[in-house]
Length: 95
Image 1: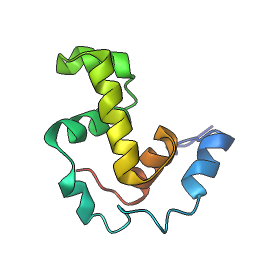
Image 2: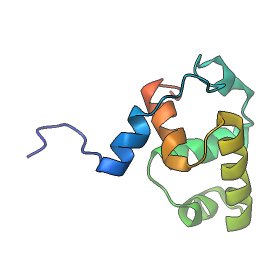
Image 3: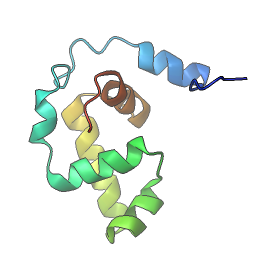
């Protein structure tokens, strides 16, 4: 029983616990440098939406969502979405 706590799989827990000290977004102010659409995509990713879901919700193509995801990964200086979301959640970067 989780008693109100979130469960993370071992691979996600490892990514969240990783060292993000060299990350450009570690101070939180850099989130303001994202485009409005990148923030939209990031918010939906945090909510657990897939690229297909995000494309449908935002009325854009699947490929455009993937381009925004790639841009987010580059701007956060990470290799994958799990690592990026770990930073966002750890540093409470979204309202």
